[in-house]
Image (cartoon, rainbow, N blue to C red; front, side, top):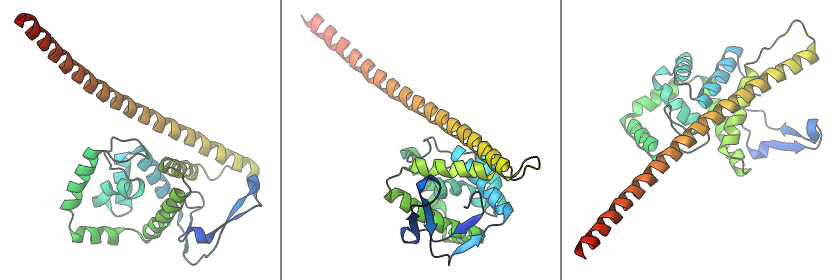
Length: 238
């Protein structure tokens, strides 16, 4: 709803969500309590979609540009932490925890922040962002309780961010053709997004494997040198 339709339900906790046995695929979700709802303007919706694609792909330049558009350019490096749990220069794959080095670096950055900085950041955020942050936190909790991984949640966000950026009109086709065309474009971008993330994770895994092999080789070399020294000492003593 947020990415494609620009409609925000600000209180999607489990008590406000029912599952009906009717609908496409044999079920549908029914949302209750529309006391905290908002229609997002089209410019914000599109920029929010762009932000999520940039967050998942960790495109720091795009994140900085969009942060400036949202009025929080000074704090752009904290957006990936807030939404995806990664630092802006993270070396870990999407959905993975921060590396120890990244955690130490983050702590240093946070220690340098003052109370005025935090207040300034919160005051600079658009009102839409504040409601979205509440919604996102509730969704995180629900997804976690259902046993789904962080990877699934972030990849789903990326899928619908891509779908939300696909063309919204096609004068040469009717409503049905338009719906199929939009879904096709969204699915293609989603596949490309998955491939990009997959390749990134593979590269990170290979780098980790290389470090482990180098470490293992170093230990074996040290052990070999130790055995050689011991052998020569025994030999010459004899």
